[in-house]
Image (cartoon, rainbow, N blue to C red; front, side, top):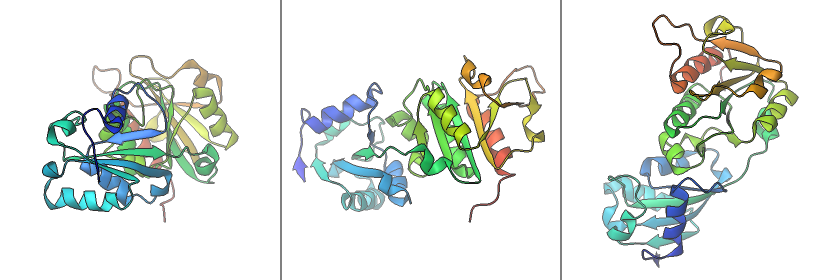
Length: 268
């Protein structure tokens, strides 16, 4: 292991990426549960473990030591730090003494959108990591084939979204691209697009979804950007019995995703 202090480049790199202002191929996390999801992922070849930063005095019991040992086997570099230094990069008070820097491989849309039967969800302009994380987790649970981020105001691969997703970014393919590229990729691969709107269109549970379905949800403040409405699409809405005009976008997306997945063939 390489000793590292508070001024080491690896500490500066992690702190810089935690600010969410850098959007490159690197991802950082200081959560043992997220690292465990990485270790279990069948898509682990899409991510390389560039560095581990460990404070051995803070490793949480047998679980923490196991995650560290299993991660070490895949890490390019391992840095040892003190508790004071680790505190500089710990985003949560109960951090387990282990942080990771990963590099992701960009996924080509054709790799995941060319399947003859597929369901994907598009997050158009979402702002809050908690909503993004909720939708990622539901996409995994509902068996969706991919999540597409389009014009997000938050970083889908940033530490806050990765944390909110509980590491499901390692299990569900995630694409991040401008709206026009997302639209072209979906229509060129034969998807039927369903725009989730508060009132217009058909009730979500009364629709027969096609074998290749793309559900688009928009930011709660601004909705889905207009360019999506200029292409062929179906509007779907969730009936509201009370006074509220709409649901939280994470809840709304979850309802529609499960309606779609209920009509999709079961995965082998």
